[in-house]
Amino acid sequence: MSFDGFISYDFLQCCRDSLFFMGLVLWNTLENAENATKKVKEIQKEDRLKGYLESFEKVDIFDNFKPINLWKKTD
Image 1 (cartoon, rainbow, N blue to C red):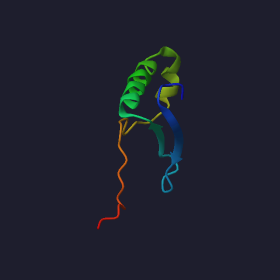
Image 2: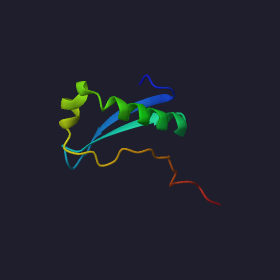
Image 3: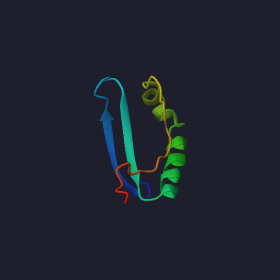
Image 4: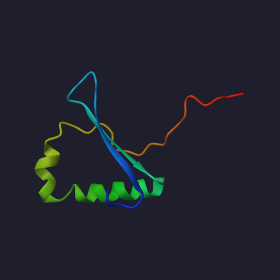
């Protein structure tokens, strides 16, 4: 939350599998999102987080996405 460009964070739980979660972080620019990703990956290497990170069974996706509007009105 302290990184440049942070807008919001939501933690979501799957409706069909209560052990499947997703963190959704919104940023004001792709550049800020990518910078935050680099910083987080460096922080994750710290010994103090080892036990926490090992508690995750797996991480399927750690990437940046852009919003699309599937419901755009076309004339």
